[in-house]
Amino acid sequence: MSVPQSPILVVSYIDEIRAALTGVASRTGAAIVPCSSFCEAENLALKGLYSGLLIDLPSIIKSKGEEKIVAYTLANFFPTLRVRTIGGMLVPMTMPGSAKQDKSLDDFLHKTCVEFEPKRLREYRRHPVCLSTLTVHDNLELRGFTLNISWGGTFIVDLQAEKFTVGDQVTILIPEFSIHIPAEVCRIMPWGVLRHAPGIGLRFCSMDETVVPALSSVLKSSKEFDRDRLTT
Image (cartoon, rainbow, N blue to C red):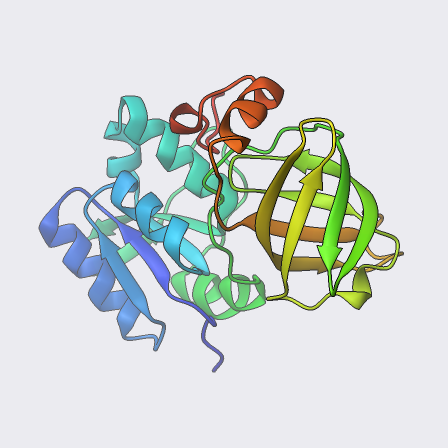
């Protein structure tokens, strides 16, 4: 039986229930990472790849403020199974208005999570901003433009994205602000795939004192308060 490529995050505020969820899910062969809060799960998902989210339903109902925002952000981003523990059993539960979910833990772990490509949570919100760019790669300056940009990176449209390799180190020049940003290629979207603009997803490696004010003026936000979370 197939298991997810990456771990499953398990969230419950109650130690005994979290231990029960972790124990039952671990017996299926899947890798499980228990979390005592949704913010703890978010911090882990910002740093590594995960395949799904197993939630104690009473915990998501009781969550408030930042915890509730994070809970719904995670549930929107990862395949999610909401359950209630009854004795030694996990009973899948639904909430009004929530997306359809699997009817059993086995289906969730061995089908839905297995078919899901593991993802890392984005730290910063993407903004649909178009800026002319020059990508310096192998001593060449390649013209392009941003499809979106955030404090953490950008997607640059390029009709020949296949010439890049994930992990390539490049420098992004933005002539409008006379700034340059070292970056790493983390995603390649070839031409003609999924009705998506072709190009490269880039993760910014560092920023000097000229970059922060330039991005602040474009994004209309500060780095500390631009987390990629659902607000509605």
